[in-house]
Length: 139
Length: 476
Image 1 (cartoon, rainbow over the protein chains, first blue to last red):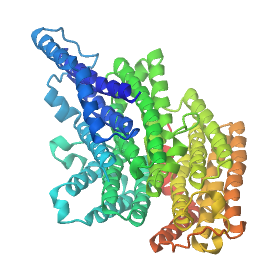
Image 2 (image 1 turned 45 degrees about the vertical axis):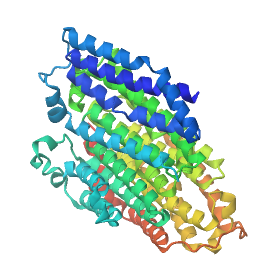
Image 3 (image 1 turned 180 degrees about the vertical axis):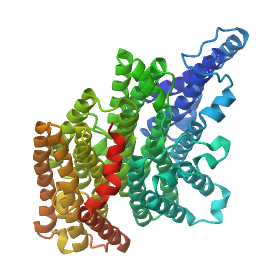
Image 4 (image 1 turned 90 degrees about the horizontal axis):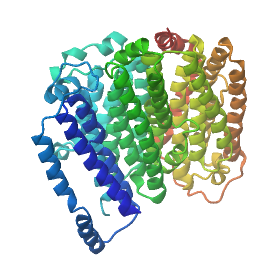
């Protein structure tokens, strides 16, 4: 059960990252920035930390599990490379998710339009990181 | 000023997690204490104009779209008050340096998130900062790392994820049907395409998401576990500020700026409010754990806020805002009492509090002030706010809901009487640890008890200068 949930959390993170890339390629930078805000690691990090806390694992078992985990996800790097080649190599039609905005630059959106969200994302990541550091710290 | 309320906690957080903290090792608590006191002072004594002044004098990349209005002033005061109580309690109860540092880090992030939620005018930013508050709260609940804490934290995490999904779906539909995510754009979009079913679906999804965050019945499953399992300073913060700001206040803000007081909205607020008032009180009656009883009581008390809002009248809405503030004061007091009783008896079990008044007179007497205010007994503040809510309901010809509010008040009296009976009339228990209660906790209890009494005695002043202007700004 734990392994399955862990796999679903990792899958969630990767899907979010690919979705963000796709949105940038589809020239919908605002939606991509929204997606980044949503996924910014928070769900994945907190999910993984909580699931992992449900069971105590010793170091030897952890090493075995780590190896197994890498074995199970061997196809992911290949998929990522294929997706990147596909995204960089193909010209895609533009659409703006019905948002009436002239802003095309991702930089402008992040720094001039949604910079408060950026502060929020940093705070979320800090909270998640501090949470993981605190909850995983061995006594 | 508004921008600094978000930036200063962030600066403190970064500073106290950088190498600088080795030089100013013990300044974390002091910095937060000064910041929260400053926030409380400015919100009480500063004019609205002065509070918004200087928003545009920040660097261009720091021009935040934040606004302080007469309602957010009250909520900022609520955050700083609950924050101060929680902070002082943590300083007393968390003895070891490392756990205290963890608490202060996450506490600062939670304050940052709540301050931002209070002043935002954009649904997507609202979502982001609701998550800031939620993520810090998950970890704060799990701070003690025992089984109960982790279970409660996980429950909150799951429920909050459902809320997040609903909020995000709502935002997506708002983007599709309106021209942006700001409150003004959505409001404009609603005026243009108000009959669109997608708008209604988006409104429904967003409201349900926020009701889960506020823990109202039937979305309350995570609340009792979270309040009961969390450490005492965290319980104060959750009950006093987090659930209110991240849920109830967010609903309030959307009602004011986006969808207004329509009959459907009023009916929904009244229905959920009545359900929470009665359900929370009945469930509180059945509890044996002090903090769990306070958790259900919180659900019931916040139901009054929804009832007042749902009345849609000036008196009712002013009563709702007043009760929003009062609840923070008397519930913080009762959680501090719970912390003090636990210090002495080593348990939250109400059976073990029998006769505790003989050895802890100060905590027992101050718990009476919390009880009187919560149950709505004059001259304590809770009486006036509940009275205003009931009058507002009557004025709006919602007599049925007014009767429910009165009857639920009797239930409230029932569960508080049960507690006080054990404290004062139970006969001395032999299991007391006989630990001396910390003087700071006693000082906190007395201050909060006096505050709830003074708010009751000077309610006309509070009503005239804070609650009525806030209610006037909310109503069309």
